[in-house]
Amino acid sequence: ITLNLSSGQTSGDIDNSGEPGSATPGENRKKVIQRCVESLIHACQCRDANCRRPTCNKLKRVIQHTKHCKRKNGQEGTSKCLVCKQLVTLCCYHAKQCEDPKCPVPYCVNIKQRMKAQQMQQRLRTAQIVSRRIASMAQMNSMNYNTASTSSNDQYMAHSKPSAATPPPVGAV
Image (cartoon, rainbow, N blue to C red; front, side, top):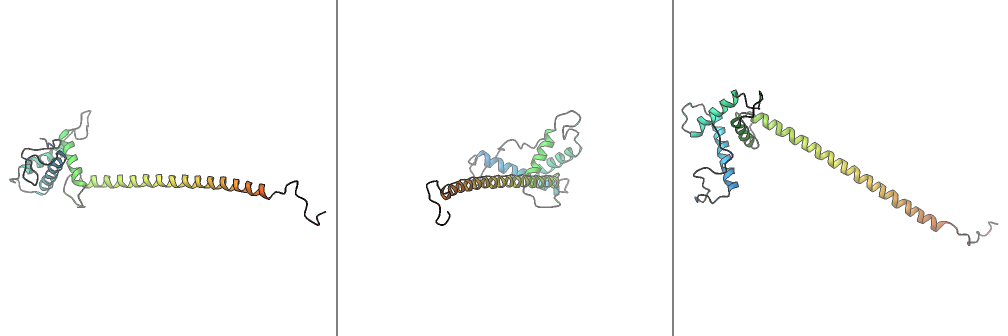
């Protein structure tokens, strides 16, 4: 059982113009993934044991496989199961666009929660970086202001000191 998500093309791929192969490999890959996501959604909602969609029964078997697979996460000293890995990858593609809080697609709700947590962590890191930059810039501005005011005070004091050649004011004697 495999999902063949790794290939960018499937036999008979055509774009909207009807010309085989005229879409770029990246566009073909997106179309293949989108069709797989649509098939996954259908398979998760379908209750017909004799469904005529060719991908439906295949994906139902894949979903059942992942529920019972012992190698799903590389447990028991084995490598990760590629079927499970492909299904989780497909579920991730789905979860990025899914807005259903009670989605029937396996792992979707958990993936969305993890993505939300990662976004919050990224925002927090960004805010901390910005805060440090602002503090650093404020410190640099403060140092520049202190240096500038010290040198201007020195210049002011140099001009305002009476020189030795200047006579004392009248009546000071």
